[in-house]
Length: 365
Ligand code: ZN
Image (cartoon, protein in one colour):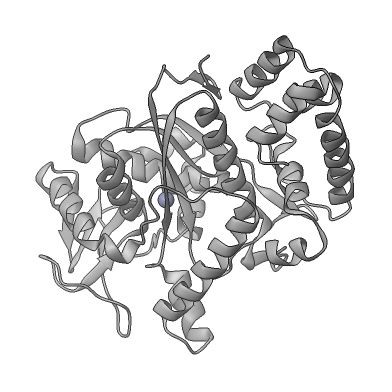
């Protein structure tokens, strides 16, 4: 059985290499984070169930403007805030039964790899040095986003693109190496003291740990542009290997009251608060019982519905029945673009082994 993810069936694999963009450790762990990582966990568990060895890299973006700002607002260092928030995040993931990734690299430990990648991009004429920084030539990269130039530029600017940086040839260009300002962390480089840009950090961690091409690149839907578009273009330009990733899994955004769950909108729903009153399996079920790419609105009352469905699933696991054909049909549903709702329908209708298999694969027992 082959896994289909979106429009692309993954070829028969013995080993699947998955890279998921992890957290910036300053506002963890909200329901939006949880959705991304629970879905990647479900993907890993489905692949493991059919005998595929899975390697997951989930990074920590601990060199970041927002993190620096949050640390200075709280009167602490970025290292201390990152360490404390990463600890909280890992604790939340453990409680949500998200398996530990194979590697959990932190940006600060991959600065040398970023410098190597930046040199490769300079050698290939895909980047230029200016004012102690090095920039990636974006060219017409934004056209692939399907956005108009003005809309793409607005989004790019809102997500750290620094479009007004006078050292750039073009506002869409992206810093691979950023000269550090006063009081900002800095590392030595051939271009002077500075720090890595955001997109190239993930490019460096993914290629260093998983190789020049990977099987699945995952992350929240809001990372598709600019983050993943730039990361992909940087890797392909540096290595000459395409595609960098065989498939992309952009997990739907979680909103609350119609607005994205985010620190900037002030509507954060923290996992640790939800787990005070609800079983982790209910939160997993709430996240997974829908198409993975769909955006959805979080409503605390929906957790009661998830709890009721979980009770029904548990009851179904102790019923007799669940033929081999039903087990196969449930597994095929999961392999068909991770169709959890269909697999749950089969589990609830057929019960027995079919229910036990689905509950076990999705860590709902
Ligand atoms: Zn990333």
